[in-house]
Amino acid sequence: MHDPLATGQRLVLEDEAAAHLGRVLRARPGEAVMLFDGSGPEFAGEIVAATRRSVTLAVGARREADRESPLELVLLQGLCRNERMDWVVRKATELGVSAIRPVFTARSVVKLDPAKVAAKIEHWRAIAISACEQCGRNTLPDILPPLPVPGALSAHDGAMGVLLDPEAKGGPATLDRPQGPLCLLVGPEGGLDERERAAAQARGYRGIRLGPRILRTETAALTGVALLQAWFGDLG
Image 1: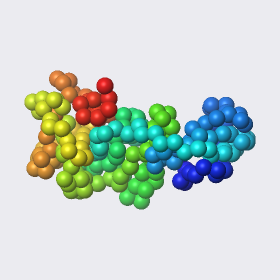
Image 2: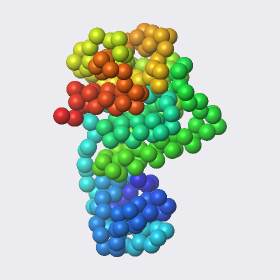
Image 3: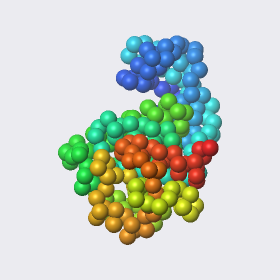
């Protein structure tokens, strides 16, 4: 992940990226690597030099490699505790969501300091980058600014909406195939309150349930994403 790449470029990696290549993967000069900048294509690369602090790469031929799901899936995740939110961002990226928007809810335990929102978004973006590197995904999902439930619903007006609801009558099989973006709204610890569910339903969000057991928020989010990707995307 870097600024836009181009064939013939020399690229110097530092900090975490250099440490990952040099100390974790034990890469050495002359070894081939695959490079991507998050926009879609990938590039053949070769390590030119490696030290404890930096790795220099030669950028080779560009290759188109489409590993994106045909389902444009936006995860509206109720803001949850730090380690749970990090886990959702990482695994949802691996499962192929196109965007993740944290959502402030009435029952959110975590309260973000407005002065630290930008830093938190960069933290989640770094997690998404790491997940892309691990799973071979070339396109970085958008990490969108947090919004309260009404604002999040308005921001994605026009998308098909799905709401995880333990009182719903059925699962993804009850849904029509989306003709455009699909938004999945997931509550935090404690779930969404009645007003938030009503607001989503008023916007046309359809409720689905994930079986008879109550799942933790991070389990529910990833199960919901996986089921929708299996039903409408590229899993299975």
